[in-house]
Amino acid sequence: MNPHLAELQPYPFERLAKLLAGTTPADKKAIYWSIGEPKHAAPPFIAEIIAKEISGLSNYPLTIGEGELREAICDWLKMRFKLEPDSLSKDKHILPCNGSREALFAFVQAAVTPGPDALVLMPNPFYQIYEGAALLAGARPYFLNVDAQSLLPDFDSVPEAIWQQCQLLIICTPGNPTGAVMPAAQIEKLVRLADQYDFVLASDECYSELYPNEDQPPVGLLEVCAGMGRIDYRRCIVFHSLSKRSNLPGMRSGFIAGDADIIAQFKLYRTYHGCAMSPPFQKASTAAWRDEPHVVANRALYRQKFSAVLETIAPVMKVAPAQGAFYLWPETKTDGTEIDETEFTRLLFARENLTVVPGTFLSRPAQGINPGANHVRMALVAPLEECIEGAQRLRNFVESL
Image (tube, rainbow, N blue to C red; front, side, top):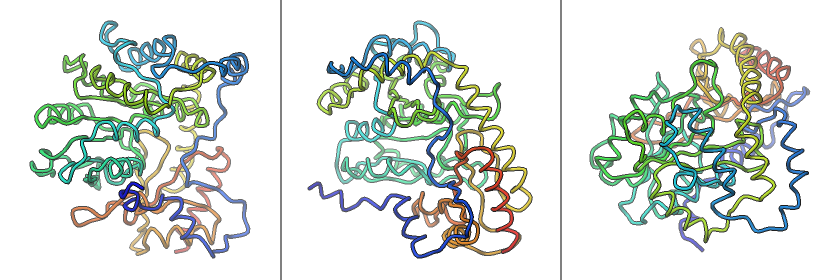
């Protein structure tokens, strides 16, 4: 077996189950703010299309995906990120995938040359797939601690020797678990660093369609490249998904886009990988990428939940409104009360039957600190009524400390 398997750490939810084992929760309806699994209804037309296209299961799908799907993705990218009509090609720049998680993991395996000096840089806290993919590719993760105020990685503190060893930099915007959005100027700086030190820049943008202000959507990496006049998107790759945008996590549908040379090589890898999307799901995905009203309605639901929850808990906890995604990242220290994130999580479960994730389960010690300490992640995926109830339980718990 791959010796790097021994380096993998338990997944956050495995650690959470162990933390809460033996603790009897309060006799109240369980509310789960732990797993970031969308709970809103999927668009009704999706099931109709899958049922209509079910005969497609009789055919092997192509790794590159159907042209109609790639065209829909291409059109969506141009519309969403203000790209010029001739700046993106469905035949050169796009690859459908079975959700961004699968693609992120596979991409690291294809992009990294293994060796003792190989580094994959990633935010800290982070989505654990980044770390596991780097380890199994034969590289070392290098964790970029987020700044306590901006909740974005501090790229200025990275030593030049680290940039010289960097083969791949992964960013996530809007971020999981912080909800922070990276500004265009910072992304532009990273593009220039990729040129200077010859590494690949991979942007996980699976939360890009969840944001609080309809007039201020988060900027994307391809959009920044286009603004720099780099419509070859050299060294730059983005990952998108229908899981959060369209409430379709079970369909496992997304795409990779960017540098045509990298896409061509990754297509070769995926041809051997054997991970093409099923034909009925490709048809449904085509319709989903071409429909925006259901996405606008989805954002409105999250906006209601964030407003209600923040109104209740902000007076008793230090918590910043999320700039994107569906998470809150509050501090567990309140009014001088010293309680670490694991004990906060365990007591909250015991007294209120409300489940959250300790920040240190989503981060690693790096450069002398652990940026997940004294934080918890809350995923506001439950229905509005449950989120309102959960917020009141959380406030009651904090006030009782």
